[in-house]
Structure formats: structure tokens, C-alpha cells
Length: 91
Image 1: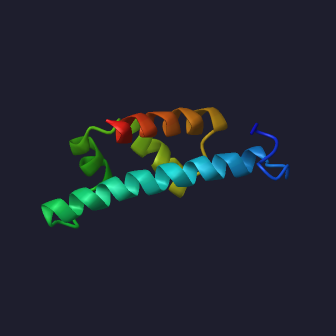
Image 2: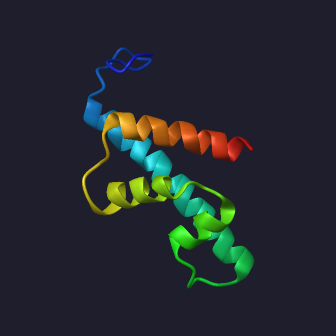
Image 3: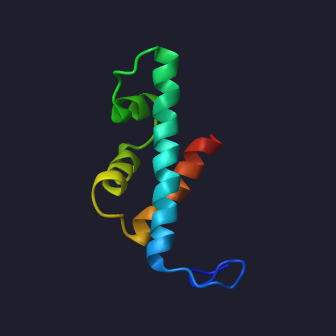
């Protein structure tokens, strides 16, 4: 599978890839924060504080913030973020 087609040979745009990677990062970071909030029994903990406690690099939280509240990050940033997130969850 390359960046131009999916498994059904339907063209995928760079925007769609950026959106998919951003969704992965958003759900991963938010899920981690929700897990910490539940463990600490405090909904008041910020996403960045929870992720910092878990050891997730804060630049990934920043990428998630940009994807949620600003423009989607570049494809390169999204891919690096996804790889780092996979590394983090694999530990």
C-alpha cells in the first residue's frame, strides 16, 4: 500500500492520510489522558499533565492539539508522531 492507493486501489489524498494519522494521534493521546484521569479519580487533570506523567513525549500532545484545534499537521509530522506513539504503546 502506498500513499496514492489503498487496498482497493481507490486513490487516497494526502489530506485523507493526514486526517487518518491525526485521528490516530487524537484517540491515542485522549485515551491515555482518560486512563490517567480515571486512575487518579480526577477529571480536572489536563491532557498534557496526564501524558507527561505517563511518559509520552509532549510534542505528540502538541501535535494532537494542533490537529484538534488548528490545521492538520503535515504528513511527515503525522507519520513521525504515529511511529513514536506506536513505540510508546509497545513499551
